[in-house]
Amino acid sequence: MRLDLFLKDSRIIKRRTIAKEFCERGLVKVNDKIAKPSFDIKGGEIISIKFGDNEFSIISKVEKVGKKDRASYEQLESR
Image (cartoon, rainbow, N blue to C red; front, side, top):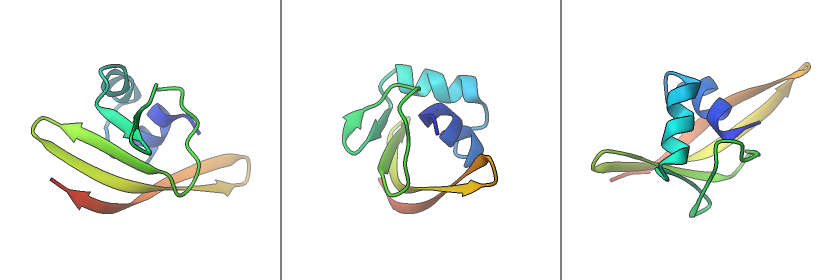
């Protein structure tokens, strides 16, 4: 599942275009590396997102439901 689609489907960011902009600005990291919007997210990866002065980290969960992937997450920390 693409990173920008994961952020939208898990309802962390409201729109895919905004999720794409966050990634392009370098505000989203996957496993401590800046990730592009097309990065392929798998379950168990740590995603860090910076919103203004705040940064929070989550663990991704991607489940296969029929032909579609379902995105969810578990929050780790917030700064």
